[in-house]
Length: 202
Image 1 (tube, helix red, strand yellow):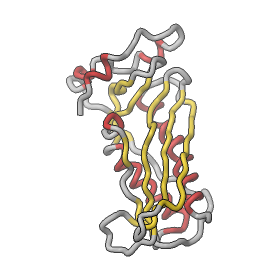
Image 2 (image 1 turned 60 degrees about the vertical axis):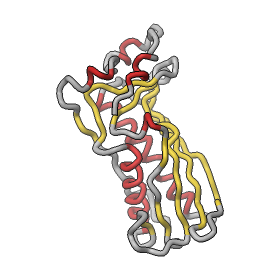
Image 3 (image 1 turned 90 degrees about the vertical axis):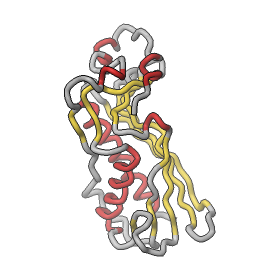
């Protein structure tokens, strides 16, 4: 997916952030003509304690804005403009990856038998709906930023039982593919653990 208008919005960086922007592919069209991007994956946290059982629950694929609904690593500059990070991509679309790792995090916390994706022929009591608000490197702060809202919805009633915003920031260091991917993975892991623990209460 190409979004040339994103790169066009990039402003001249302020002093001190120039080095962080060097790795960003400014004209997005040029990203497709270079070497094959390095592919990075996201992980599901382990060893964070067991959350216990719970009612059967379906984890829906997260919603998000068009910019984040891709396999590209996103960078936000100090003016708020977004661009793809050159030479790096995720193993799948971000929403699909987040859904898979969220299900696996539930399983790693002891919910193997009660959590699934839609269409896996279980009769759930609850559905976990999430929306990815942020999943990017923030140049101004030098951090990986992940923000996800979560809503627990009664599958039969459609009534929202609980809702909350979860967020994490992790220092990213240099904005290159490996450092960006590692920092975003750490931030996502913190958010996934928060969500899994939250669903186990109340």
